[in-house]
Length: 270
Picture 1 (tube, rainbow, N blue to C red):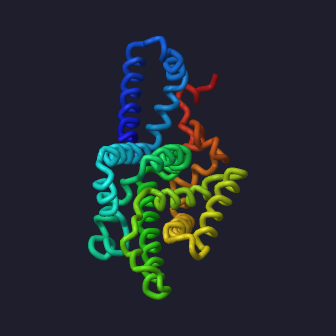
Picture 2 (tube, rainbow, N blue to C red):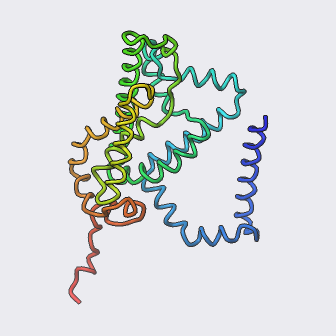
Picture 3 (spheres, rainbow, N blue to C red):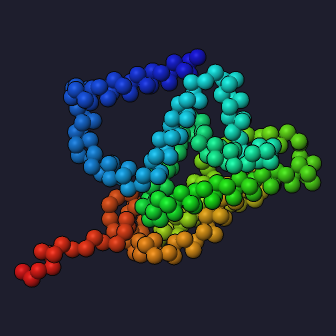
């Protein structure tokens, strides 16, 4: 009850903020000045990665819907979308699709930050179609490998049979695959830091006892690294020349593609 009241309060505050901005009320004038100064950059950033931000919008809607459900109904609904062994053997396509669109409120806040920082630059580099393909490939293969790991543990290593019905939903496997592929795009310290983080994910997942989700994350990283040939295709390979660090990918630059051709009058002799 308290959680729902807090969420409704946040919604009411957001509505008041929008109304205040629209009417140029004094309390929001600093925000208006900020938008005047940086709004074009923010709009460019969102437009440059449509698949990333549409996906975040869908996650926001589904999360909001889940928060409005009674606790028991919400838990039952999430369990029904889980890619556990029982569901994967009964209706794999349904749960593979649905499981990628449900996260918790805390996870949503994390994904908004991580998708904006890493997946949006990856989409500008790869293009929307390739980005979706890598995300889906990572999600499906890592889910399958995580389920296989559970099956091995239940069948051969005497793990509890309850693992057949564990909950496993979210965007993490597809995200890990794209983050791993982004290593091929970065240079310098950005590549070292991202590579070290992903290596830690793989090592942690390889440790017995960390759980099937950790091994699924490790598998997703390996899937993303294995998709390296995608980065050698025309239209993607050329973009590596512009921008070396993650900071370069957060602002308009040559990192977003080949330089635009000069206008005809610019080519005319002075």
